[in-house]
Image 1 (cartoon, one colour):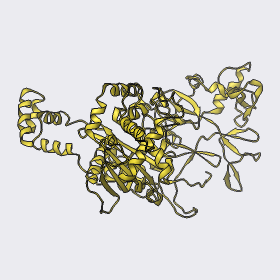
Image 2 (tube, rainbow, N blue to C red; image 1 turned 45 degrees about the vertical axis):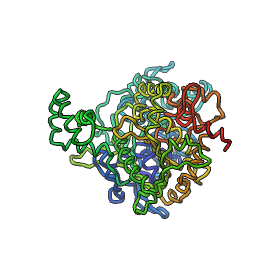
Image 3 (cartoon, rainbow, N blue to C red; image 1 turned 60 degrees about the horizontal axis):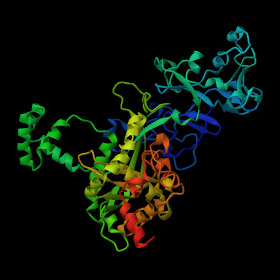
Image 4 (cartoon, one colour; image 1 turned 90 degrees about the vertical axis):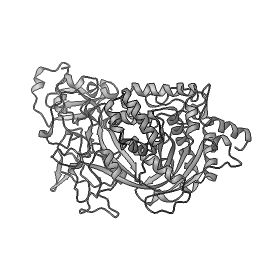
Length: 601
């Protein structure tokens, strides 16, 4: 096999070029095998217990890295050539063989032309498998086009060519695979269609390209031909956690006290009966809570929460502890100076009434792990990042640790709850709720309740504004939204931070803007920037924009940022829920009105 040396950033080994992804390198098309192929000695283990817990156990490992020029002895990751079929850019010869020159493998045809990967591959619609299209078989199937049946018995395996000819039409009809032995010819346009490969008798191998034939499983799902670089060929699932001294949410502390009460077992055993209500009243009186809270704890004892929500619960509690402490003199990877928001002369009180505290996150460590991936469809089978099926094997997750700085904003819960209880607000958010419920893959996104959509939109506006003030590019900034009213501890806040695999994420350009005296004017400036979009009035009056129409009044002219910066890939945004519009009262609409009334901007 030909050895190709190419360098990737550590973060790229998790996304976008993680396990199962196709990457183009120097004219080659390669695919990353699962972590069972990794050299564990050269891949250092990363520690983040709270992330491992949410993953259900396993080992976090970072790809081998080097700081100097790579050599033969430098530790590296293995990538497989895929697709194996290539064609010569000079003579068009189509083959999956690699030539040799003076004992060394080379990516060259016998005529001297470079070999180019075929642009189409076959993807399983439900099994998340991917494979080469068997071009020789495909070229001799389908309609005969006047050629005799004898072509089905052709054995001219080395006579296949990929040609371009406009005499048969334009587009894919002009790209054809031709057999020089029997003159059989088929256009690539015949690849397309729901059952095109099925009609030609091409079936799924039930495996990934790096797996041996005996590792394949019986798969009767349909194959479809897609372009090699199509986005749907690789749908990664990753989980990221901030490495913080996780605090226990107040609701969990109360729930633990309730479960440890001597009478709690009687509440559970009665299962909602009259005796349960009576005993719940006794427990509530002892612990200073309500009978309803005791019954809620008893009814949710066996419920599991999504991993990301569990992670955010602990992070939210940790931030709350830091916000009331002022200057943080501690050391470690989680250093936050917390400040209460006081009224300022040039800042409308309507803003300080809702934005109650900010935190200057001087240092934070984020750990990102790749769980696995799917192909073609978000409802397809999940393929884990480690396919080693040995008994008692701990799965290995590709991981990268990032260090950075940031700004945390907390909003008043009473004000937030009162606003999102308004009928017009709930009706506006219900549009996104319904669309999320109708899309199977979108249900993996956060629930777009009013507080989430408003704070998510605000995070995007701040990212765009901070890119001018902090010295960081907008693509270098990340968001983390804490906005959920269905949890025991309701959350209403956001974190904007920068994370990098080296020191560039902690240069101080962002955290210096986190003090209320500097941050509040920036929030107002961000709101003012988005008050008028270059695509208005179309944008502000819209309720169907973005991928799968999961944005309302939000477009590239006002709210969208780099997809790598956003938790939901630029979805679930709406300026109306933040700034107001038509009959919808915005979360910070009054602050914007007061701003314009004072003439500060």
